[in-house]
Image (cartoon, rainbow, N blue to C red; front, top):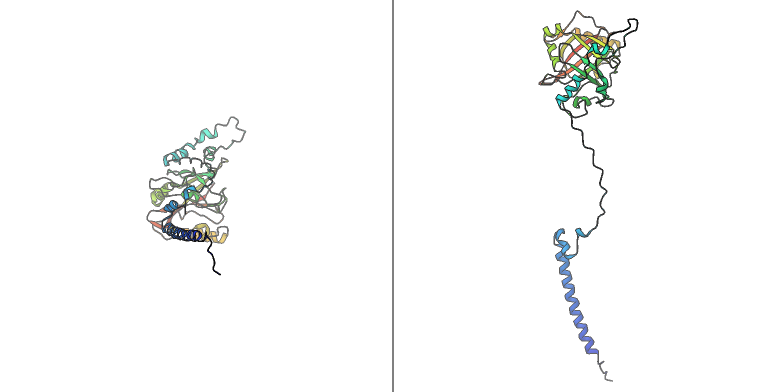
Length: 297
């Protein structure tokens, strides 16, 4: 039996062929666009909708509070003006006794209150008559090298401060207290300790005075000035051990050094308390100048 073709068959067949052609061309074009997009740098991909950085909405971060404006560091001149201003005339400080029967009230010739307003790590004051050494002494509670590189106002740099390390008590009750200061080229801080390398100067200038906030004064007499190596004295010797301390003192007086100034007529024993002032020597990084004094009153 002969089949009679559907009258719409030819029409459907024509439409099907057209769709195949259209879809095939569309797939080729889509493939071309995808390949083109992948071959372009990210900033151009947005042209094809594959990457659009500018359309991504990012929630803005909360703006942090601005840091406080740092206080300008004091100049070196201002620092030394502070030191000079902390000095009070001793007669003015102690006044006159109106009642001879009343013991005088000790008043320090140093305005420690003014110094504490700048830095409360100040705990004493050192004066070396015959030199311009007349400065506060500081001690940082945790960082032994802090005041090697920081000034009294907390700023980084020179001249630094005259300071001790926390191994030493701040009442100078230790057998040996070591005090450090820079050898500044302009002659400030501990630079003038180098004058004690001269015999004439050493013989004429032997006093060191430590002023404490309670008004008391500690007076020392210099007995030695010499070049030493750069070892850390407090780590190298146990000065609490009487035998070690005595041997250390003996080694000072036994020194055979024509460049050293040592008063070998003085007697310093392991029952005495001494201080050592330490500073650098220009061009000799492995050496230090030590000026040592014993407490006499």
